[in-house]
Length: 227
Length: 227
Image 1 (cartoon, each protein chain N blue to C red):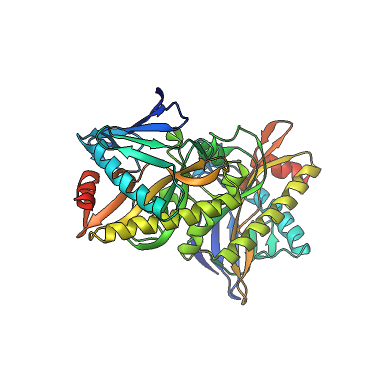
Image 2: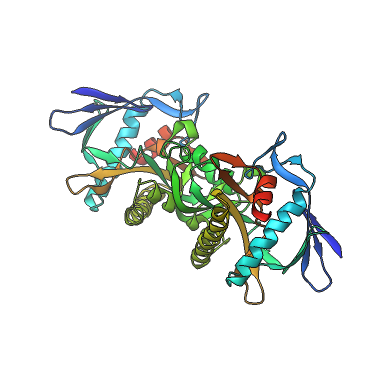
């Protein structure tokens, strides 16, 4: 088992069978001790955050697999805080695909001239480049195609998958009285046919969720969803 | 004749017949005396800049009108530095539509991970919101539609018009040995049928142009094109 990448919230190891092992860490993105799913830096470390994120990810990936939605998930070992996944090829150097149900965060910072804070959005999908140096710029379907990152046909698949997966997560949260405001996903090409599949994780660190009008922090979300 | 708007580079007056009179000023956008078509502040004032911009605008709008491309142009009075235009309704609070033939400026600042400086782009069209407070954020077709600014059908028309007009400007510049790198347009709804038409101006202040590998400043461009 060989360490191939040290990420902000996960380390990645190559397994002998060609799959990968993701080791979830207790670091979370944010600034100065405050969690922010849109941040590019590690802002805080909380004991148990890695395992909690993995438990939620395992739950969601297993629901998705049952529903026939392609993911890179193979299995998870909660005690070891690791998840085994199939190899995936990123689009370009990585994209973030965001599904929005309420106007908050970077959406509001960009489009505040046309949207009220917290205004309902109908599963609005947008894509940003993973590029810390350029603050993860938003990018259009036309630009993704022109720069050879994603074809128009692939964009359609990505958008539909994003809406489907977002709806499933939103429904699961809704069962516990939690409202999903927005969620970000990563996708890649998986398997010999290089089909588009969900990769990375689905945990509190990837979404903004509210209960009774109050923001639910990642660890709290994982507690509420899994208890 | 009533002043209805004082702009960065033009003042706008309402005429008695319902048309508008645009008075071109000698102020240009930029920072600290350096011209930048993408800037939101007045950076320099050059005597004759208003009239030179108007002469080029008149030339291009008359070519477009002859080719049957809808614009708001009625006529121009070079001595008075004024242009008469039909009333137009903006999309939202105004959009800028950019057509790019080379990767420079804000495109490169956003997508520099995937594009080399100066790399050829095939008449790539993108839209930004006119919003000084939010640094004119780029916006996708889906977001324009969702926020009620522009429908998907209107976006198609806008994109096609942008490519057509860009090609005409590029060709005219090419006749003088000048290469167009990028150009920005404004569009609005004009006439009783509210068709999409080019508005504002087409002058050196709206584009980046190069000759023999050197940037051509707006006043120089206007001299080269009109002499």
